[in-house]
Amino acid sequence: MKLVEFVREDLILPELRSKTKPQLLGEVARHLAHAQPGIDADVLTRVLLDREELGSTAIGEDIAIP
Image (cartoon, rainbow, N blue to C red; front, side):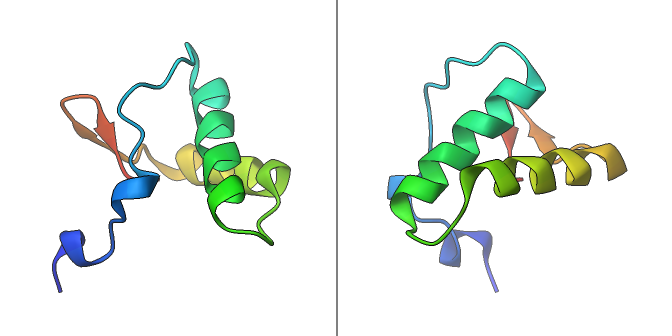
């Protein structure tokens, strides 16, 4: 499988405004919750923050795949 098979163009956020990791993950979670009804942005934010505690999802060049 290729990563491109799982990435939807409407879920790519090229111009995030957040300055901190928690703010950024909240921004990402809100965007995803808006695109996918049934996802709770607050719960997703907590899950993403917990995941980042295990290790960064950044892959370089200002790109991350949480």
